[in-house]
Image (cartoon, rainbow, N blue to C red; front, top):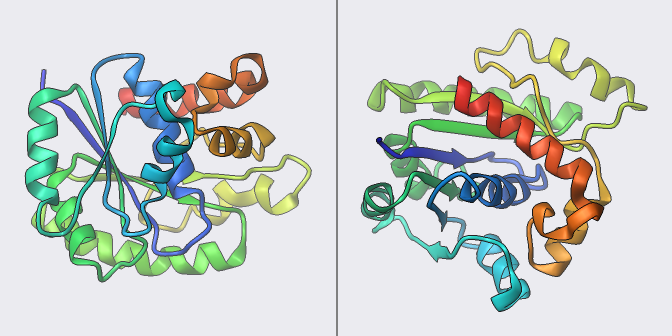
Length: 212
């Protein structure tokens, strides 16, 4: 079975890119061998794993650069069932372009705010260029930090309906468990009962992605 290669990217900071990547990797690692590649120069995924140390439930995180990212994805895909890539936060990054040429699926976390909506327009244009080089690339937006009490959160699916990139039905709610997991260097799966609701969010995204 060919590996499923997934990149998580957004050119706007603070969208929860690393949170989504790390927790998806943890959930997918419970289904099969999973590689987590950190292509973000800030190294947030690597730092997250280091905080947890030997007790972390995360798969090993490998740092990659623009010069070796395509090779690293290829090697990981030969060894693992799932490959996750936490991408650089800049659309013009050479590493991000190479990642989008090398993966099957691009997930774009987006928060319920006008700034995130506007920033997504630019990403849609970059995605069209990437699909020209990688015709098999599929992309979905993933709503993050959703709050049922917030009217914009409730209307985000409608607000994004005119974008060319579809939105997953499932997303991540605003939950303290995601922050706790980062502070403790584990995934929400590693929090036990404290992370149960957050795990349900992640599992719903994984199941939707695997069926897409």
